[in-house]
Image 1 (cartoon, rainbow, N blue to C red):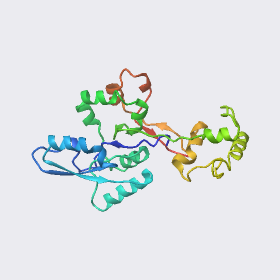
Image 2 (image 1 turned 120 degrees about the horizontal axis):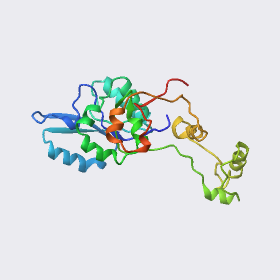
Image 3 (image 1 turned 180 degrees about the vertical axis):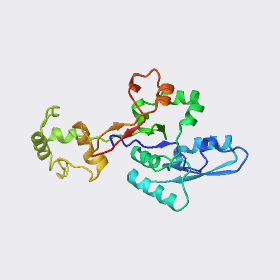
Length: 248
């Protein structure tokens, strides 16, 4: 729940043929999910040249947030048109893996360990751990995002205020919000606003107060991964087989 890490591509649905292991002797069509097809033109062209027997059917799935994306993917699966290669945020990764809708990557990673060591050298173990579910690895991370809170320093200056200290209180916050309301060129600023949603809405306030809405546990396992790809990385010490969120 702490991070909604996005655009992590790799997992294949059970029974489908994955991009990396398409048989060279057969003609294969793979439904390949991307968010922005133009970003992948060079990669897809290079793969098509290396595997001319593989036809990549590009599926663009978009949404306001990943909940919408996951809903569309699950609806496509239920309709009998699954995506072979796709990506998901952290919570959808656990959903797909937990329901058996995504293929684990352990064997593939170990079979190609030398290549993947170069890849994981650029990925923080903090992020890699979010792609685990119950001891196996399910997606390769491409990028990540985080929930943030922004302070408009122009309005702050207009209100004659200084950047608050870390020890500021709830009462200080209310006073700042009131002082920064009705400012700006049009006089229509709000002292505080957030989107009415979980991620990017009120969750940052939960995080900065060092708590969460669910209890956090680590599943056992994962030694095969940490010993192979992060053997000399201090930040990998003590990590396991993925997060669990068992209770409120």
